[in-house]
Image (cartoon, rainbow, N blue to C red):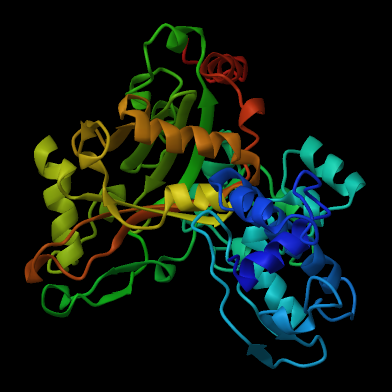
Length: 452
C-alpha cells in the first residue's frame, strides 16, 4: 500500500510530472514507479519548489498559504498558517528527505521571509521576476529582493586604523576588493543587495564563538574579544601566464609589486614606521585570494602590545609567531561561515572550526624580523575534497557572502580563553572579472610606484 503522505506528494506533482500515471488509473504502477529512487527524488524536488513558489506569492499578498494540494483533500495539509495572525499550528511533521530543503515556518510573513531566504537563493528563478533575474545575473549578483541586513548589520562601519595612517597610507594603497563602507560605496539598509559587489568588510568578533576560560572542564564557548589584527585590504587574482605553468604564487610578499613591498615603501616615503603585516594567502585552483591585516594597537607598529604579556591569547600568539611549522600547523584554527549563498554551498563549507594545517598543505613565510608573517594555505594542492569545496564556491562566488576567521587554538588553562586572530567578510566577488596576477602587477607598475 502507498502511504497517505506519498499519495499527497504524487497528487500534488501529477500536473508537473505528466510522465507519472494518475492516481485514478493504475495504483500498482504508481507504487512501483514511485518507490524507485530517481522518481521519488524528482517528485519531492518538484513539490519542494512548488511550495517555495506558493510561499513567494503569499509573501507578496495577503492571501493565506494554501493548506492542501487540492480542495478535495483539506485535511491532509501538515501546516496551517494564517497571514493575519502570528500563531502557527502543526498538524503533523512531514518526513523530509536528506536531499530536501526543510523550510522553517513563522506566522509573520516578513519574519518567515528572513528565515527562509537562504533556501530561496538556491532557486532564484522561483522568486524573481524574469526582468529582475536577467538583470541581476548580468550584474553578477543574487536576487535584489533578498534583505541585506544580515550582511551589513554585524560588521564594522569604520576601519580600525589610526586616522593618520588612513590619510597618508591607506588612501593611496591599491587593493582589488574595496571596503563596502568607503564613501563611494556606502550603503543604506533599503538599498538592493545587488549594490554589494566585490567588496570586503570586517565582522564583529563577538559574532564568533571560541573556547572559554573553563573549556577544558565544561566545554563552554564564549563570544570572542575584538580580533587582534585589523583588516587592511583584500586581493583576489586569477592565475597569470606564469602561474598556468604550475608556478603558483605561494609567497606573495616576495614579489616586487606585493602589498607588503608597496606598504613598506609608502610608509618610508611619508615617515611612518611600517607596521607588522599578517597575510593570509589562499592558493586556489584558479588563482589567489590574499587578505592583509595589521596590529592596530601594536607597540611601535609591531606584532605585540606592550602590557598584554599576561593575557593568555597574547602569549599564545607570541608562541605561534616564534614557533616552528609543526607547532603552527597543530594550532592554527579556521572558522568559515557562509552568511548568504546557495544552500548546497552552505552545506559543503559548513561552520565547524578546523585545524587548517591538518587539512591542507600550509606553509609560512616571513618572521618577526622580516616584519611580516604570510600564512600560505595551498587549497589547490589539498586533494579532491578541498578542491571540490573551492570549485563549488567559485561557481557561486557572485552570490556568496562568507566570513573567514582565524585563531590560535588554546588547549589548557594557561592558553584560554581563545581570541580571534583576524577575520574578514567577503561580499559577492565577480570572480570571472577579476584581474590576473600579470594584469594587476602591470597596472600597479603603470601607476608609477617606482618598483622597476
